[in-house]
Structure formats: C-alpha cells, structure tokens
Length: 355
Image (tube, rainbow, N blue to C red; front, top):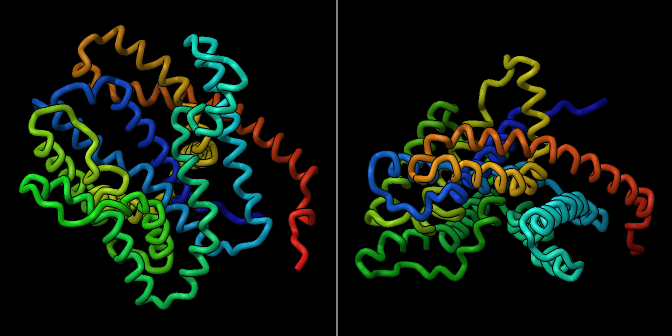
C-alpha cells in the first residue's frame, strides 16, 4: 500500500523554493547596489528580510523528516540523489556559461568547479547539506539518547553559540561585542535539531497566530536592518542572514503555520501542482541560475533604473519559475535513469559490511 503524501510538507518545500527564487531576484536586479531610501526600497528591504527564511525552511524540514534515520552502510546511498542532481545541474550551468556566456569549457575547469560546488552557481547549499547529511545519523543517535529537558538545553545551547552572536550587528552601535561569533556557521545543525523538536512538540499556537508572528518578526528584522545601514546599500548582516536572530524566529513560526495550513479542500489541480513543484524543488533551485541569466538581463535592458525594477518582482520570479520547471523535469528524468543504473550496479546487498 502506497503511503499517502503529506501535502503540508509539499507546501513547505514549495514555499521554500519560491522564496529562494525570490531572494535571487534581489541578488540579480541591482537591489544591493541601491541606497535604502524611500518607501519602495524600505518595503523591499522588509520583504527581502522575510524571504531569507527560505533556506531555514529546508533545514527545518530535514529535521522533521530525517530525525528517525539511523546509521547503516546503506544510509550513504541516500546522498547519491543529491550528488547526481547537483552533477546534472552543474554540468548544464557549466555548458551554458561556456557556450552562451563565453566562459571556459575545458574538462579541467569543469572538474575543478564541480569539486568546488561552483559549477552550479547556487551549489553552495549542496556543499552545506552534504556535510549535514553525513552528520545526521549521529545527530539522531545523540538526540535519541537525551531526555526532553536535555534536548531543550541542546537547542538553547545551539541558539546561544550559533544564533545569538548575530545581535552584535546591533550592539556594534555602542562598540560592544557581547558574544564570540566563532560558531555561527553551526546554524544548519541548530535548524535541524529544531525541526526534530517541532515534530515531537509542535508550537501550540494556531496557524493564524504563527503567521502573524512570522510577519511581525519580518517587519522588526527589516526595520532593524534598515536602521543599521543608515541609508546606504542593504549589505549582508548576520542579524538577518540565514542564522540571524530574526530569520530563526520567522522561519520557525512560518514553518509552524504552514504545517497547520488548511489544505484539505484545495482543488485537485492545485494539489497536483504543489506535489510536482515539491518533487522538482531541488533541481528547480539548482537550475534556476540559467533562466536568471535570461530574465534579469532582459529586465535591465527594458528598465534601466534598478529601483523601478522592483515592481516587476512577481513577474520576474514567476518567469524564472516557469522556465526552471521544464528544465528541472528533464534533469529529474535523467537523474532517475542514472539512479536506476546505479541500483543495478550497486545492489543493496553490496553495501552491507560484514560484522
């Protein structure tokens, strides 16, 4: 009997990938070169602050879904899908960059960029996620060995060492550094553990309250960021970055809201589209660099003033998504063929290690 898909998890994954494409709009439309002055730029800065929850949503979802995985030799086979998806998308981006944008096309360059996770320019996430994937069985074993009170203290400790230092963006106004930021790149582990905790002990608030809380956190984070840049360009600040205080708050509340979203009565066509986007999300994310090179140069030629491009935000993101979807589907078909071939070459019994 086929296990029924949880449409709310598809909703979270789909929302996250659309938010990623939206963050890339700000990256590619000239937004970061502009001073944050005027209502339009301030509104865009706040929207961008909320969209930074995209990567955390993926990490929270990993904790939710993979928290029961245990170590075994066959566990590592699960990384193959991610590696193949990156390899296909990286090769496609490399060829486009070489053939259409006159970049280098040598096999040596291809191999170097693949190993550096730069062949697909958005491949940094794969480099981060593969490291987390290798740690997951051991994180799960540690989590299972802890009592509930100890789990809460573990999350509090991770927030203290990985998230709390982001407030130094604020305290720097008074030339004070309260916390060392040496461990701030532990944020993927913090999100993963929070995802495991949310599965066992969800936030008790209903989805409208969680959504309002996420919106309030977004506005507060955006206003803080606007204040800190003091009319200059919207530089990257830790307080609103992936592991920033406001991003963590927004992501957890938004995740909790989407987990309760009333999707039962949605039309079948909407449910199907949501499921397809969820299944294609990884390849859509990786391959979206290609339509970015089509949409945003076209937008820049038509709209010379970068600030005027902001009103094209929904249209530009929608165009990138629509172009990415068929490209991603082709990659997923190729990926399926490669994985079926590896299943024949590397059957499960070969992965067992004699004891």
